[in-house]
Image (cartoon, rainbow, N blue to C red):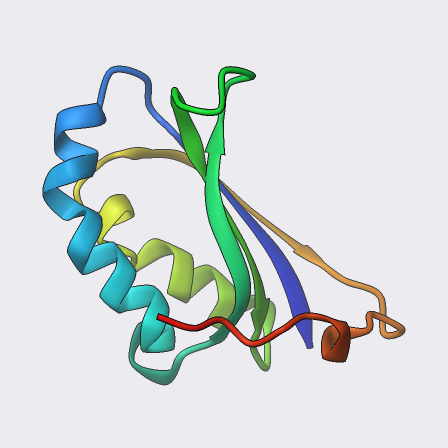
Length: 104
């Protein structure tokens, strides 16, 4: 199944975010050690396209619990940066093949 993951970050945590960015990227690249596959994702920002609000991803995972585990085990979440995690199922008609695979 495909899932939309939205992670809202606490404000004022930019320094901590930078400290954990490389570990976060590794988590995404490995699907959290195989928990989920990230088809596409990015940072969420204020309208200035700079001030961080969080991150999102479209995940391929067998269950909601697996998608949730991926989000909760992200280094950003483990470091206390994440205020809220939202996992929403995407339609069975979701056309994942239209997304180019993520590259490093």
